[in-house]
Amino acid sequence: LLVKPSYRTYWQLPGGLVEHDEPPQRAAARELGEEAGLSIGVPDRLLVVHWMPTRGDRPAPMLNWIFHAPVVHGGPQVVSPDEISDVQFVPWDKAEAMLSEEDAPRLPAARRALREGCTVYVGR
Image (tube, rainbow, N blue to C red; front, side, top):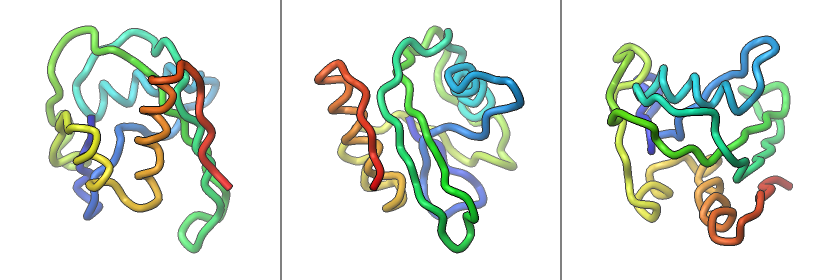
């Protein structure tokens, strides 16, 4: 599942910031609802941990998690058009090409995690 932020030229995986005292897997479920209109239970498995270093517009390192979470009900939809202009289920190979160079490594890592039943770390 990819979302197209209205303020970016590329697509992204749904997600966002963890709120105060909010566990990451609950944040993932909340963000999926807010960005794609999907209602899921608490994700059942951590697939990927992706560490990204500081850069010009990001003064602190960033840590991203990808969870496995089957959709409970509903189909993806644009919930907040000011933030997200499109939401789509996209085949793995096409999805990787739609992501930024920085985000794209998360997809092959997630596929590997699903295939091997493990959590995959991506970072330097």
